[in-house]
Length: 423
Ligand SMILES: *Cc1c(COP(=O)(O)O)cnc(C)c1O
Image 1 (tube, rainbow, N blue to C red):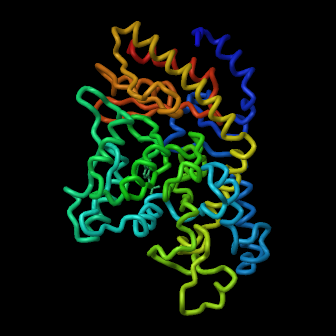
Image 2: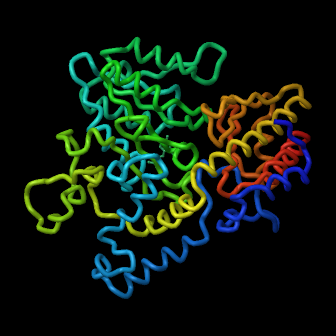
Image 3: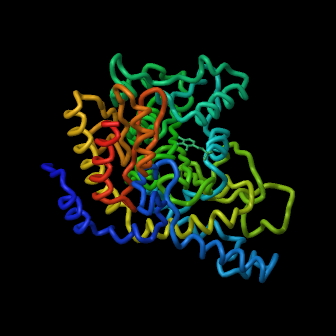
């Protein structure tokens, strides 16, 4: 697409954006009396203005009702998580019985690994992408060790080819086939946190299943970013956090998906009272009777305060629609890519955008290898009220978020980047 590098052009694109009004529903941090350029929504999404009232509702109901709030609050606490199910299912392309909002991300990953990483005989390995988010590596390695196995041999990462930064889909499938019956589980981040590369959930799942392994995905950087179709694509499980693209606040409550084919089966799991058949939960009986849904994986009662924030954030996704968000995201990130490419060409090719260009292999985030004083550029951007993210030794990450970022943000970012290079 032929773009133009002017403010007027960016403002024209904003005027045509059917989602432009959503920006006013968020608090934007200020820098020297002006809104910052916030490109870190992949790290911590902005606060929906409606969050404060939603929290206050629960605090007021607690003050007014005490324990009775479990059944008589405006949104009864007893079943609070159920109010999040339909929106969450829409967001990840699942059936309602396949999703549950609970705990936090790494905790959910552990609970799901209990069910879906069950090494047996020579089938002991977990295959993941090169450099998954550290918490995922810690979870995989500790689960492997928990089974009395050695993470050094049982945790395998698919490596990029020499001189490349991202993974070729055929190399992922090739590695799965190579490991074959040694593979217990393939577990990828659906979007890698460092490179922004999005992986083919359907293709990886099919390849894993073909060799008799389970397939799971960490959607931390994919939920609210990509157009997901978990039920149809068929992975066995997935989990995600809500504070990145889902704007539900620091440490917000997380989500989990278990494919329908596993519901009501006798998969082993770590149980707690909130996973017990809800009709009989308060009979407090001795034997665990699991829910026939993903709720069977719940252990504890619902954390209502973070869920109140998540409820209003999900409601925004329902109104915006992931189709429209994704369509805008492809345009917005495409414009950013074009602007950065232009600046790189003016500066002897100092930037190498490592995030794949194909829409099927990327989301909102761009990751850029910087030649030269990348850290200095990052610091000067920050000093100018531009929020992006620096990963040592040489990666600058930025995510224009379709829910609240504008084409004008992208254009202004380009101006700031030029100035930051100049010093
Ligand atoms: C952000 C992120 C996490 C963080 O996990 P928490 O348990 O929510 O602290 C884990 N994994 C991935 C892939 C992430 O991007």
